[in-house]
Length: 307
Image (cartoon, rainbow, N blue to C red; front, side, top):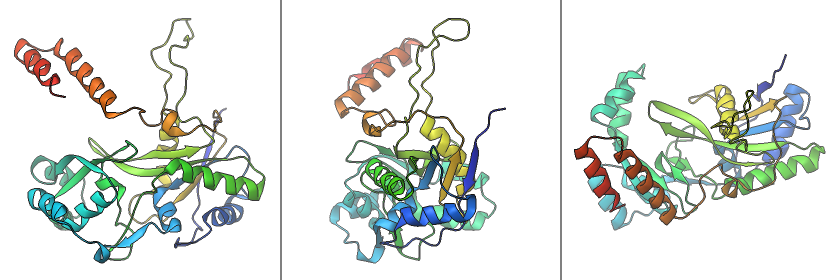
């Protein structure tokens, strides 16, 4: 029988700026599961990283510019929130309105219609953004006001890979155990939300078995498993999204490929500049055109010229 275990560490206290997070994790693991072991995979929410690094701010300290006010006026988004997105250096790619069909969808997932209506009325929309590192964020640049005191928000660390590496090195130095570290954050999906990996250290984030022969000897169109994302999805069952209070998970017994390469060059996120991204979109649009009726084929082909 093959198995691996997923432990949610419940004894971690509320994290504050300046806390020694690696030591707190080590202590919590010793209390709850004996200790960290070599080969364990530590999966952390980005929020506790942000708190320990002091990446928090009071909304009252944000200076709103004319540009933020202009975007707010056109979208209905809180100008302070727009300004924080701009201050992070993110480019707004898409605006998802929280009315019409989108509001109907989120109401279907709510047990408190009144509370959900008030939330949608306040938020008005969700900003899909592109970070300076070229990473797409589907929810307001990763800025998060949940599970914080009123008027306080946290920000994503600028380089999650670097942070994961630092946490891993500190834990290894303190325990002598080689572990992997993955940072997780919540993103939007077409029908809800999911936690995804945003950085890691010590683990190959994606398998490299594309084209490998299957059990009948034929090359398989597959084998590019997003291992880091899959592990985070398992850990997220412990994280919860409201008040579970479990920001750290240990995965034990899962056999993985160790790697010290950086994810940004190791396929957790697409690597390339905007010209390459536009080229990819053009190629997809033109390939899709070949499978559509004439009018749509012409429209897609012409539209691809302007991407």
